[in-house]
Figure (cartoon, rainbow, N blue to C red):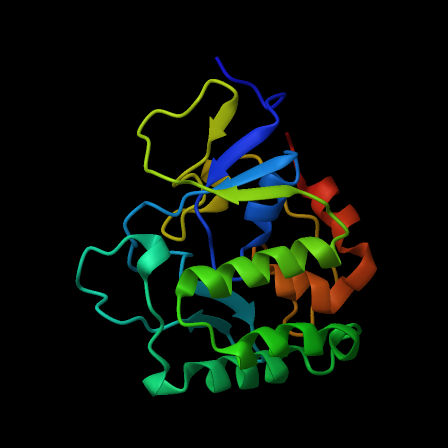
Length: 213
């Protein structure tokens, strides 16, 4: 049986991934991103969750030909809905007054302003940016073909982190509460930007303490 002593993990690529995602991948030296799976609707691949003033906000990226079977690496973003402006306004409203927003905002806004054609490229830029802000130097590569069974030295974590199931079912992310902008109760497992904007350089330590593996 494979153990987490393995150095590489194969995982799907998400939009501004949740804390559960980061507590998991931080354990590995190499992150292999599955680019040859079919795009899954209502998944973390094109959505993330933030804490707004009155509710949890869902940011969802519209895509072209969403009803067709498309490989993740080939999914094109639909910019006709000006979603990137809406997303940034929502992020600004949620975190504009948070302690580290002014230091980090330009990095994230810059990615939106590039308007990548493909969802893959947008998600990849955000992932590499977040790892950089966490000061994590990981080897990152993507798959060339889809393999149902992966190599013995790779942990297969595809579909492990799922927007349709609670993080509690995996039992490797144990939320450590930190000061958030809104609400009286801590909201766990939001997008990584919730942690970065609220706690800044303390984010990595919080993620490490949140991991049970």
